[in-house]
Amino acid sequence: MREQDPKKRIKNFDEVNLGYSKEEAVDEASRCLQCKKPTCVEGCPVSIDIPGFIKLIKESEQKEALDIIKKTNNLPGVCGRVCPQEKQCELKCVLQKAKKPIKIGYLERYASESKEEDKIPKISKINKKIAIIGSGPAGLTCAADLALLGYKITVFEALHKAGGVLQYGIPEFRLPKDIVDKEVEFIKKLGVEIKTDYVIGKIFSIEELLEKYDAIFVSVGAGLPYFLKIPGENLEGVYTANEFLTRVNLMKAYKFPQYNTPIKVASKTIVIGGGNVAMDSARVAKRLGSDVTIVYRRSIEEMPARIEEIEHAKQEGINFLLLTCPTKILGDNKVSGIEYIQMKLGEPDSSGRRKPIPIEGSEFTLDCDQVIIAVGQGPNPLLLKSLNVEKTSKGRIIVDDKCRTSMKGVFAGGDIASDETTVIQAMGMGKTAAKGIDEYLKTDSE
Image (cartoon, rainbow, N blue to C red):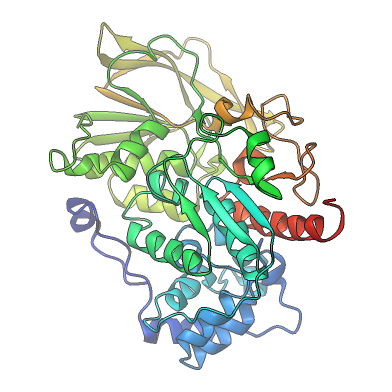
């Protein structure tokens, strides 16, 4: 991989990892053993023919490799950049035993960068209409799969650009937005209509949509941020990661005043959390010019973020304060610091990670002028209030193995129906929902 100098990278907000050259891609593809029983495919939520596309890269057939990927994945440029392959397909690679799995993600990204124009397949139309609420990875995947089957698809997106978390949640340097826009445009060319600035639950209810459409897929993600429930969270200078990343990514606050979305450029930023969103928030704050520290209550081994993202954060000069839990955000009207307590690890909890336990008498404080809370998020209640379906105690929609909800004709997938869903897992649910909707419309919709 052609890594850029970290100091240089930080100076330019838009600079990204360059990925593989043709020579590097061919060399990496040549390591693939082309297993007769490819366990890597078992680890892929969208069942890409991994050995098939890698073999074509080895033979310098970049566009043909992309064609194979697109048989099951219409967002290859996205997945090649943000999919946690090290926990999925690469983990299942037989070369993982020697700690040298094939870099499947980088090869998928290389294939997606083919300059040849995509061919739009001929599609036999079906006189059935389907509404998809939310244009994130689950919604876009479901829309593309159903469009290819011939259904008339309308996607309703609350924000002014399609893509969901791909647009507002993942930073430009990790996922350039022209890549997202390109893949959204391809899906639109399949016949999918995308209506932006439509807040379902306000403009239309689910019942009103069911009068106009034969089936509905709900994929609105999890846009309601969680808080720490400690004193001081309402002080000026405290952001949730959701707000911080949306302002910077979707609304281009990093180009203020060219874009009229101001955001505080802090001297010292504390990011609380250990997931991918925490890493993204920290790296964005660093690029804006802040000195950044990530605070996490467990050890680095328990961090849920991708190993690659943790390493990149370290390379870029971001500090890590581990086994530390905030107890109070300090300040009068504005943030001036955080009070912490040190932790030790006990026995594993329900997540499989060792439970952090406070150490009595270990309290201390650190100065800062900005805090970003990145400890997860849940379903936005706006739509759910108008959706009469069974839900979990956390407010997520309960679905079966075909993504069916308790309301006839209504399906759901992605973060709205599952905890801790990655982009590729959401896409997998989108594919499952498409199959379920197709089966429903052909068999028991009457």
